[in-house]
Length: 185
Image (cartoon, rainbow, N blue to C red; front, side):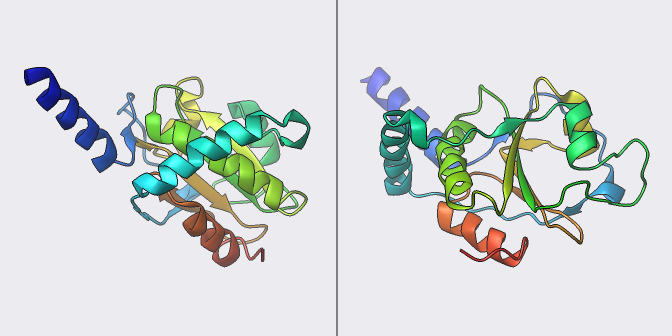
């Protein structure tokens, strides 16, 4: 009986929270290099189940997969923003991009990953998709004040980037791509 109650409580806890708290809470909040929009949106259990099915179907057809590039602090400065040499935001890329700040231990991050893979295929050639492992790239996590994951940075070709936090449904991500990045589906 106690096991059943414990399992039920753990399950409710996992579905109640849609973002993990970063393990490193010493992040420096550098507000000059970001424009944060906190958009917290809960994903439904049905969408989570669909995501799991989509992940299985994507894995079964490897030639259709589109790899999302992992960024280090060096490649971030080269491809996105050289935060060490610039005080004002200056995007280094030509096409808008989305950067997923994640950690391997984060369950919502794992659920977001196949959604971003799908979007990277849908917007291939229009939007660049990147990932930053906050456990490996603590300097980047600190620079952008990442305290909960997943956190998604939407970077338009021109203008200021915007940050969204938490596990967002695919439709919300598509809306942000349209509104923030000015890329139509």
